[in-house]
Image 1 (cartoon, rainbow, N blue to C red):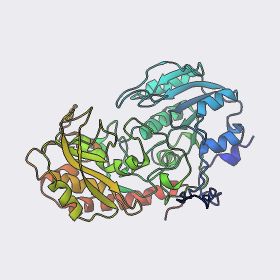
Image 2 (image 1 turned 45 degrees about the horizontal axis):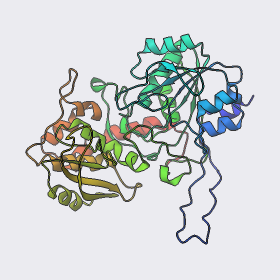
Image 3 (image 1 turned 180 degrees about the vertical axis):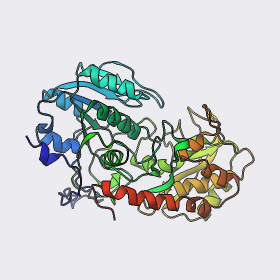
Image 4 (image 1 turned 120 degrees about the horizontal axis):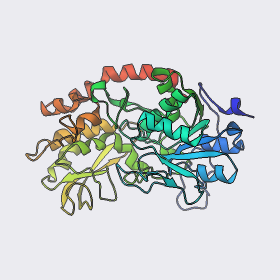
Length: 419
């Protein structure tokens, strides 16, 4: 039994192997990527020792793969780990459902295992799924992308809360944050809590799921029996393109690591009725625009010279979402330097400049609160400042005190160094 060697509850792991150098005869040198072992890699290498004698409920989706793209559940099943059941988040366990969708309940055809639906599940429903499956340990392995409104981190929170009430062991298999360890953006305030942000963290949290789980335990879920199998070789200065961890698109509109870099900012455009966030194109969240914009939007954005950001004039026809089959004029947001790029500052600038056009309109919220962007930002201050004509510096400056407080609060829960 190596449980005590693998389960990490604090500290920093260092000193990892480096990927082989590129072949010198190649005409173009391949980038040397840092070798990173995920929590899944480490658990599999131990022959699943941390799961000896346990009945395991696996909370996971299509992203839980090893370097050969073999899935966690498929490997565990082949190695006779006792899997009590599988619980899928938004988009489902195998990833076949669209945005806001799930795969429902059923049987996984590959393994014959029972699959439960965890998307939008209440605390009582989580407890029922764990109880019905007979689980003694919960294993969580899902790739996050580093934004508060990406729902997988709230699947983590809800399942941890249920495990705490049932006194189940909770094991997180950690994965790198693909957009690094830096944090930015406004803090969620309780009045704006929702399914896209349940607790007080900032918009770009800069933590791995293992670090977030420790944060949840320390701040809100002290009774959870949490263990984290940390990554080896990762630090907060590394982005997805810097490591050899395979990329599997974690949701249908998150096709590449480039998408993840801009997503914490341009997802705010989902809260704008008059602006497409690029859904229905091959570059969602990187492309944005509308039929009534023009090339001056790109000119004004380029003139701002935002750190690490480039704006290309772009024209596109969305196939789903807003403005289906209508020609949209806008920009492609390209990240030239992830180390200095702030996606939320860039999105703020884009919204301020888009508001110059007479057709600009915030999207009404389908529930009792007026505007959907307030739930995404976690506050109505973001919207009201833009409406009042505030500058980019004024808007981003409004959350700096909250951000500094969050950075202090998260420090004890970090597992990896930051630059």
